[in-house]
Length: 497
Image (cartoon, rainbow, N blue to C red; front, side, top):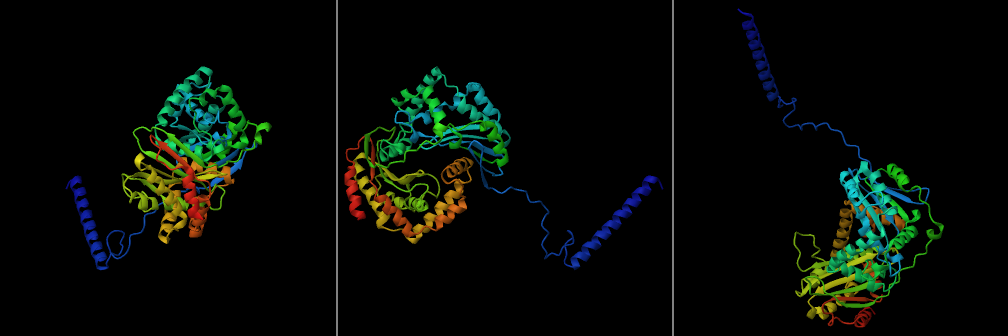
């Protein structure tokens, strides 16, 4: 027999033995009620696979203060993306009526780059690092924010510092930016969604603080020049009025890069203790014949003064807002539109001629407004105002049911938790809370306060806001049928008493 034949015979004999052994093993396991996989009983669970739990740092907010008084606040989110930037306690409320729109003008100047980096290179640097710059102006703040990868956070903060203190704003460039600003502003003025809130504040706080225009117009923009911009920055951009914010970054690293970017700034003693003028809610009336694009409706807002950020009834106000709800007569999409709220059920579901009705609130640290807003055809504007006054009175005259309370509280708590998943919203939220409270309240803390709200709290808040001098705002191509503010004031006063 050849060597090859002998090897083949041995392999065949080995295979036969393994086959016999395997068959015997299967027979034994079958008799014992076990499977051949790891010899487990058929009535036993397979063991869980072995795996390691990822090590995730706790999501918590950290606050510290640099040597020059600038506060640093961070929140670890375990995301690969970081939102980093600056919150400045400066806005239109701190300016004069002639220059109150300077913050919004600076917002539009951000893409112009700096004196060291031209606009094209500035945009290219952001694109190469996968970064996005956003500058926002508010009545009480300026917000500079860059969304980028965590490894580029130092570049992001340095870019913001360069943009603020070394902007590319020569006289000829400012003249060019004014023309572009007015062109863009002209488009915004055609949209009711952007203009109605602006005029709400101007009507409610006539001629002071929160009522000063947030935007520039053809007249006020002529007052904007390089010296006015420099004065605005030198006065309000003090380290003690600034908060460096980072979402998705370790606090130690944020402190280090904040020190590198802003650590050499010093507070100017003549500006560090500027006394802020308290907001003065005036109420009153503002009627304007105003043509919105593709919208011939008459727009009416009924506005009241209400709680501020520091009020113990803040969450009661928010629950009341959720109870009232509202929206448009047409809404595409699935559920979740608040169709069981009062304004949806009692107004939009009853009056087909009302195109939109909703409520909203705008809150600041020393005042706030609560507004009912609706729109309808001009010939129905008087009836619309009557319905809005009735619904305002019913906030007090018709206490919420248990079902309304539970639904509103659960919806409000859910909305807060949902919004907290958005880094941009978390960025602004922790900055504002540190500015107002000196600390940060988590969604769990807010939920606890929400669940403690009762019907008596709702009635107290409603009674308080209805006692304020109501503000009537009416805008559209025809506002002649809208009642006068004094008529509305008397109707509410008689009902509340």
